Image 1 (cartoon, one colour):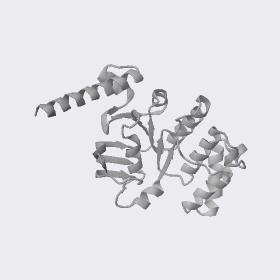
Image 2 (cartoon, helix red, strand yellow):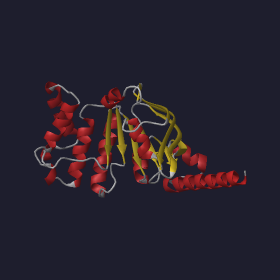
Image 3 (cartoon, one colour):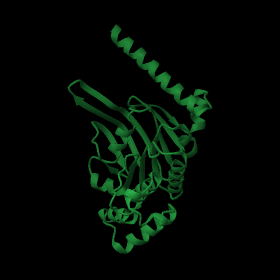
Length: 257
């Protein structure tokens, strides 16, 4: 459903060239939550923005449901839903108006849109806020509306970029439950986070990314066995530390040459 091969992204400014992604490869099948785990600045968001056609890669291949993100961006957008912690809500629109608006942007016929909205409001338990203005919503309510507008067109691939960042425990739990229910529907999901308990709760497989490169990937039991670290947090720190040491050795070798 998602295939990434040799994905690289470079940014150029007055200081030179910054490589945000460096030869990243992975794949995600339907019905799986693939966790992209890494510290801030690791390259997670850059990767997800390429998959969602917001950014163009410098080189490499990225495909969503068989469609190349470079060759047919419009088709990719019709197949994906993207939500981040910064997804905005219009203050002067109600929850229902917001979801309707995005449904119409996706070109959903009215006779299909209204039943679809009812279905989503059932799943996310949103009926009590359907007529509430965005300006009157709590953070948790706004997150529910963000999820609803992300999935209104029933995308096959859904990308979550740190959707629980800054949320309290109860609201974050509601978001995670919603993501889990989407996996049960057979959706292909990428879930980017740096919160270890979310990884343990949700992800079927994870990739640890640091400074633009995937350090390792696999199921949690596979990674724990491979690195002899049963605790997820310790596993993460161990992988990052090893990667930092490798980079230091590489830099020293280059200086010697």
